[in-house]
Image (cartoon, rainbow, N blue to C red; front, side):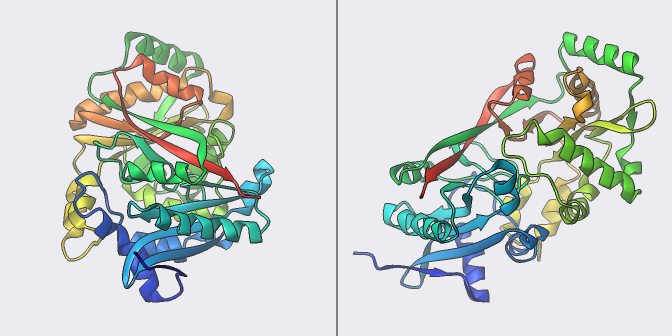
Length: 373
């Protein structure tokens, strides 16, 4: 009989064990993409979201061997915005053992009850941009770097413990260099002529901090009403995201649209895929991980469609046809053959656009929920 013990992460060693546990759990899994340990450490201890979120972490050990981990989070901005009392869980990983899963989730639920929460849901991050959703389809595929991968048995564990579906996100793989449908070509031309839309330069935008802040304000505005459970960025989060991701965006694979007064109205952001590079790095930049990543960010054969959207007043005017058309033109120039879409909530009408393109379901991931009051 196993002698499982759960304990809260308190020490540096605990944190190191928490971060490194998946490296051993997924050692023989060819699809798993390990996150950089340095990034994980920052997300768990120094990220600006922790200025308003609370979180606790636990490990389950069998003797000295770690067999499970979980992070529980309370985001008061989310609860206030949606009039809920939810605790969320993330960084959930464990061996295929219902008792380990039970210990982890029960402990998170107990903390939630102590804090007056009535529901628990996840896997989620503190806010909307982090990794979220348990993989339920597409286990044979390698995920984008910003997405969770998990073994199929995870779903059996959480459903056995009373969790049910809250929502699903879907991702598609599309041929990036096949152009856009003829109808989209026509719509893009009409929209540009009718509204005097033109393309801006991301490389120029990156030089102006005020323009970068404007970009994230547009991001907040465009996603606020369109994305399920969206949590707008704070100013600190905007600064943090700008510092971490803006340097890697370029005009090669992405585009921004401006109106006749040079105001930003829409965007389509794509990154070179770095998933295989992260697999080679095995969680560390040094001594050789940075070499793999440097090669990857200059290789556009496979890309991840990270963000696309428009300000509320420009939504439902065909503006997406404009940036998708331009991104397909750029894809051909840089040798981009395949692209994987960012997770989109299945009930979002924006998902329907892929029906006009060649596409195949790549992954489906699920947020689970459970009453705990």
